[in-house]
Image (cartoon, rainbow, N blue to C red):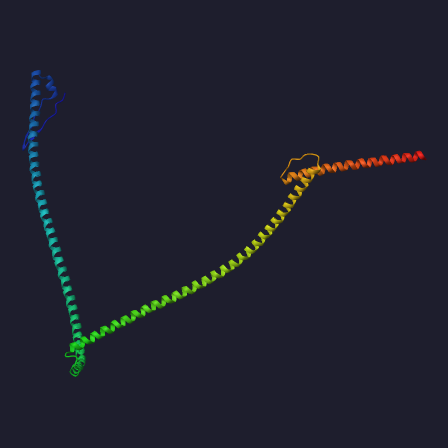
Length: 319
């Protein structure tokens, strides 16, 4: 086992330790080796303590430097904050100064515009004054004329009375004009309504005439249709009367024939009232009578044939 060489430096002092060689340590006694080991451990412990002290000193120095840097940083931050406040105050002051300057410029421009407007108003008022003065000089002639009229007139004592009378007459004239215009407008409205009414009445009369004409045509058509219907009804009634007469005649003939065969026939018949039944009986009777006549004729013919044959036999016998 080898033991490293430890060098401890504290400040400016240096201590050199020369441990025993391994060969010498192996040859030494156990007690010597134990002492040597303890001495080496003590040296290592001392070196560690010295390093701890040196580390603590360096740490203290670093803490002082860190504190110094922190203090300088705080001072720098405070100076930056102060400078920022200074800049902000300067910015606010600058804005205030700029606003004040712009307000003063705006106020100056407003005052200049107001001065220009007042100057133009002054010029306009001067023109109005000159025009009014000219009108006054022109109206003085009328004033003198009105004074002359008042002096010569008995109904007016002052110019104001004359002017008021003129204003009254002028207002009355305006009222009359408005009344005339209103009456003219009313008359125009009435005239327009009358024309519209006449036009609508004319249209209504034309429509009514057309309706009357159409109604007359419809009436004539209906009269023709009624006449045709009446003729048709008359023909139907005539045909019905003819058929009724024929039916009555047929019924009477059937009744007569039925009564006749009831008298002539040896067979008792049921007293029918229906002409068809009566005609059936008559038909049966005539049919039976025809059969009887045919049978009689056949019998007569047979008798004639027998008589002729008898005569022929007698003639043959005589020959």
